[in-house]
Length: 257
Ligand code: BTN
Image 1 (cartoon, rainbow, N blue to C red):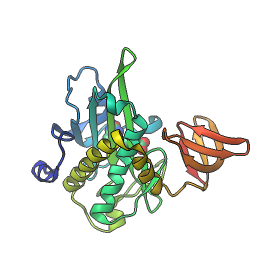
Image 2 (image 1 turned 45 degrees about the vertical axis):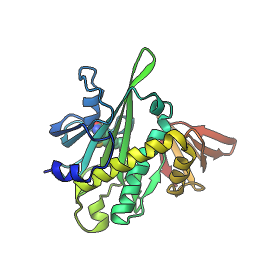
Image 3 (image 1 turned 60 degrees about the horizontal axis):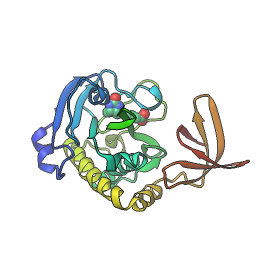
Image 4 (image 1 turned 135 degrees about the vertical axis):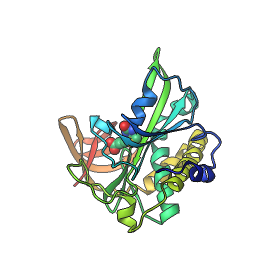
């Protein structure tokens, strides 16, 4: 059971996580916050669920997570034009917030996989799904959904990418409350940085992305493109060096070769 008091003691933010909603079971924390019927309009609201019956991943995949072992949560950003201008950087800030937390708390060496996965020992330990709601062509809310495999010891069934958890990598159980607070503390800091110094965010991100310079393929729907991962540009797009030149990739699944 998640200890709200312990979490509160470690939370050091101005607004992220100050409005906190806890569910033992929900369909999906992202779906809940995106739902037009809910009237939650407090930016920084965090919704945490012990279990999601319809947890969602990128590309319409399912996000599977055992009950009360991991962290599955979403953060709402409501009417924040300064943040919505740079959604790719919100993506980078979110992955960095998780990666830096794993470094600070457990001395792990996470690797970032474009666009927003976090790997440890080349296996996936965290995935992020960012979704938005628009009204009259204007973004009204953005929901950052984060799933971190924390204390789950076994992963049964099929996964798009081989999974792991912090517990498996460290060889011991960790405190989810402390980790969630650390992630939210770091996220708020990175979001402030993103408003003034996006280069810093990009450099921090790239320094943890070990696949730059390597042969990769990118799968988008039914097409696969092969090439060398040349760089990430200032908008957060992947630059792929192919036989015919440099291509800008805006979305897709990266498959290492
Ligand atoms: C991915 O790697 O495909 C993204 C996974 C995102 C999972 C999180 S868990 C909390 C939030 N609620 C969801 O339904 N999905 C996100």
